[in-house]
Image (tube, rainbow, N blue to C red; front, top):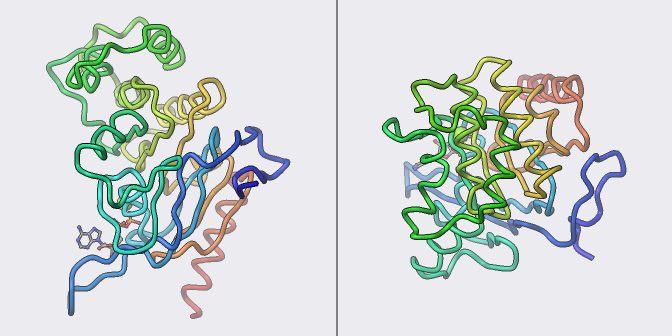
Length: 262
Ligand code: ADP
Ligand code: MG
């Protein structure tokens, strides 16, 4: 049995069999000599299917690098990064592109919507570019879950920040990817808009059966996840199952104290 199947009993979302993604002794080194930076230092972690994981840690701790390496947006220096059973390093550009298109959704902090397209056109754009017809039933389910049925003909400038980011999450979900990576998706939002986006990400896991990995600085945002992983200096330092905002905050404070005393 894989590790991912052994979930904390307090977790609201039971993991399905197998890992949606997995890093094994994953290292990422940028630069050489004086400019050498070890962004990830032998990280091993599993993202179980149908689970919502939050990644936290100080700025520069390697959160974005981990997301990019797992999503095939950056190469790795050593170890292994797998989506399902597929090892990313060694894939040809063509196969990597296909894997990213079919299996992975990515949500950026800056929503990255096209201003000249309306919401539904933005949502289906990646599939249109790939020359694919969206699965209509799935698309309708995503749109119903996003809660923006009345705004589909609106352009990004006619939508609030929270609505725009929900469109961006829907775009990441449109091709029915197994796993969605979101890098500080609520970083540019007020708390009410942030709550809408987090609710939608949670629904993506609970109602739509997707796997979500989200970087955040916000203990409240992290509490939407089934577990929190803490990174520091490119290493996983701790993990918290079924986190409450208070527990996350507590853990962050403890790290601060340890930093100051070490
Ligand atoms: P986080 O997302 O946790 O703030 P990052 O993953 O962006 O951290 O960065 C981790 C470390 O790797 C930092 O020291 C950062 O300066 C370095 N780094 C990230 N991307 C690059 C890059 N393209 N070239 C060189 N160094 C980088
Ligand atoms: Mg980052």
